[in-house]
Length: 277
Image 1 (tube, one colour):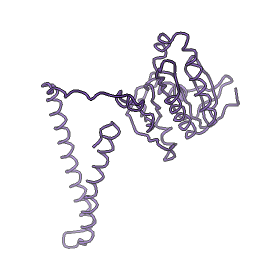
Image 2 (spheres, one colour):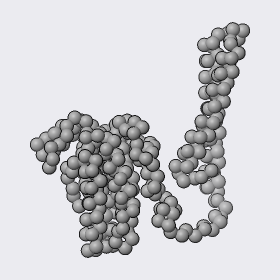
Image 3 (cartoon, helix red, strand yellow):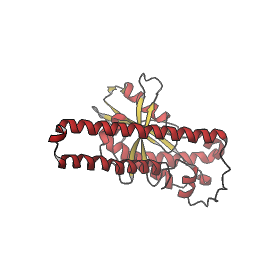
Image 4 (tube, helix red, strand yellow):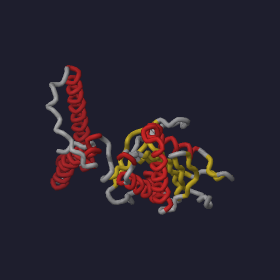
């Protein structure tokens, strides 16, 4: 094993989703799949200064001196898996978990909760996902590979870790496959036009009404917040007779622009879920 980097490092854990099912399906041919998988991971990770710490079956444990290199390597590995040829056109979906910390180095390797945290983040992921801890996300800044974005997926309770972890997902434009339909499109599979859905049951209509009520409540809270912000701004500018008209116009223009920003954020959220407007 190469000399282990000290200080702040980024741990990366990977494994194949449903590998046991793949083994049962492919039999002896699983050996060829595993060989190709290992080659992809090792080639992409070592090309970005990754050091292999351990491997067990289809799972890998790597360490990187820099968080950006770890994420870049993970992205390239996912892209390579997406375009590789697998036995019987099998889809190989790999989940990856990354966490950055300052672990202690034992004579046999790294020790500490940072290692555990990275491994647990990997286990809560799904095949095809790259999940990051909040620390790793912060170190990335805006230095992301082309065609890549990062978004929060909420807090996750990690086994053995007392506090929940805020987790982020790396979205790769050309290999992201959250839904079966999107996966079919990416693999150029003809998808038949679905039949017209029946009228929603009463429970569905009630759900729609609940969504509407939630959005109405959100609108009301936004309106109240904007009104309060305007009043605070005017109070800072002075009494009614002393307020500069140009300053008032500027305040109005700034709040008017919020509508455009909110609209853009809503459309972006819908786009990430595969809903085009």
